[in-house]
Amino acid sequence: MQEVQIQVNGSACSVQVEPGTLLVDCLRGPLGLCGTHQGCDTAQCGACTVQVDGRAVKSCNVLAVQVAGRAVRTVEGLAPAQDRLHPMQQAFSKHHALQCGFCTPGFLMRAVSMADEPEALCDPIDPHWVRHALGGNLCRCTGYEGIVHAVCEGLVAMRRAGAA
Ligand code: FES
Ligand code: FES
Image (tube, rainbow, N blue to C red):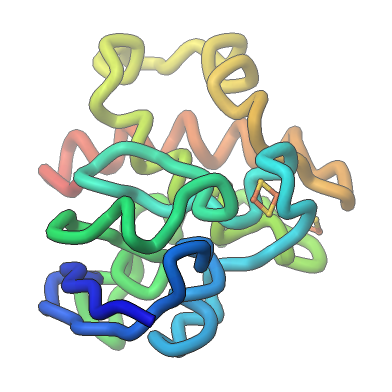
């Protein structure tokens, strides 16, 4: 076991992990952040997507020790307050962009990371770009139509609100 310091959702955390512990297992286990889901464990489905230093990362494809000293943001860190949703969460709700919801945390974390990409400055956002950019996230309920609408609208709402 070794001790790793990680900033998680804005708070400094110290956690004991094995050298081979995946970030997703560290988040869902000792850190108790089960909003990050675990689907394939082979970097294909995107259910485990989180942000590391603002970039979308599949947490089943990274070791916990590799994010020592870095800032990890999970779906639990999206909403600005307990009674307020993030603009991307609002857009997912408005467009019914979830069915069983298993894929939703990963889609949300990938979607908010897209705000830093140049295509996100367009208004309206190109849905073809959104579909392509979401290619690493799978929805077994095939709710893609609503997800694409939500991401297009959510990115514009994020820009207007100055949200990250
Ligand atoms: S669980 Fe990580 S990509 Fe599927
Ligand atoms: S809403 Fe069920 S897997 Fe996407």
